[in-house]
Amino acid sequence: EVQLVESGGGLVQPGGSLKLSCAASGFTFSGSAMHWVRQASGKGLEWVGRIRSKANSYATAYAASVKGRFTISRDDSKNTAYLQMNSLKTEDTAVYYCTRRDHPTRPFDYWGQGTLVTVSS
Amino acid sequence: SYELTQLPSVSVSPGQTARITCSGDVLGENYADWYQQKPGQAPELVIYEDSERYPGIPERFSGSTSGNTTTLTISRVLTEDEADYYCLSGDEDIRVFGGGTKLTVL
Image (cartoon, rainbow over the protein chains, first blue to last red):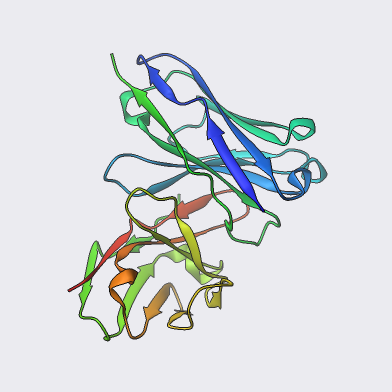
């Protein structure tokens, strides 16, 4: 059974940092691209960014709204993806989901349950 | 940057057909996926590559694309279909979601 479990969310002050984790199981993690998607309360889904597999040079890409502040990484030995969030703003407050694509043209077929990040003073 | 436009809401009666559209230039050259999200839950894949139904999704759900518009069609709508629906597309580097459509089953 495929599982994605996010953790690391919490309350952080504006300008602060937080690192989210996404622990994967039930599939070949090393072969999949991992993406992060967020959703502010009562709002729509927003793609945050992705990291590709080792075979694709661990290439990363980010939404304009987080580029330069967020960094996605992965540890294939731990089947875990990470989202490092720096210089956080109140507008980054959202539930953060991780999801996977097992091929560049495939959809997001499995999602985690999400972890809440609140940026507030 | 890409943009995908969806109507904020669609209302239908049970048993009717709901059509949810998503428009954007990126759809002319890239596939679209559709996701269903119910309150308090993570999104779930419904349709991928414009028209492929994800395993386990009822045949009542179908997708099609014409030009720069992709459409999710739900036939014989049930009350359990009430949810938010999001389209997704993009190129190899950037993915973008539509703003979402709230389907209300009256």
